[in-house]
Image 1 (tube, rainbow, N blue to C red):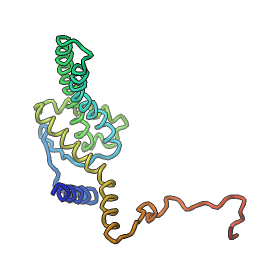
Image 2: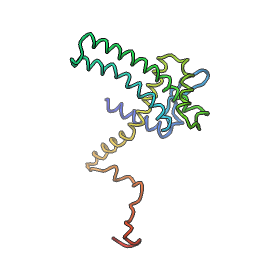
Image 3: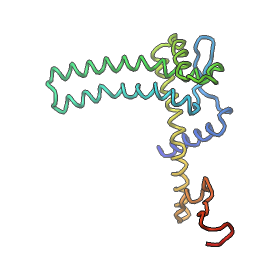
Image 4: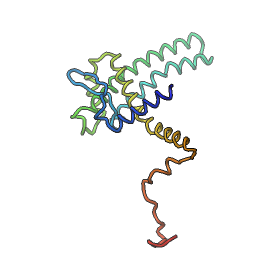
Length: 198
């Protein structure tokens, strides 16, 4: 059954990628403005990831500290203090980046930000605007946006797997890369005159 669920998710991600305007995206409000949780263009995705990835790292930091403490490399009392300190630092780093990541989502849909050369400055501008939201709301927005971005990244891999599965049903081994047209036609070596068979 998990494979069927994955199939549905892939089909939905494909539909969203091909027809983004026809999808009813989840929304959130900042003041009187409504924003959608939808795929980000590459430049905005880079800005978003620069804030979202440290959140993931901060969430893992206390676990890394705990694992180091359990490995016996620390004294018991010192280890518990290190874990507590890691938890505090983790929460502060998450707080710092949550509003910025949500700000990047807002900036990507703001008309004034579309032609901005400094996209991080626009994300910072919106980070100050999203401060009206609660920490829980910001966390949900960032997690949902990350899920959309992950689904799109997995899309190509899932399509390849589906093709391989279909090909295996025919009893033949197809090379997907071999069926796709090359990006550039093969060039003839300069020593061979044009029109000559090699």
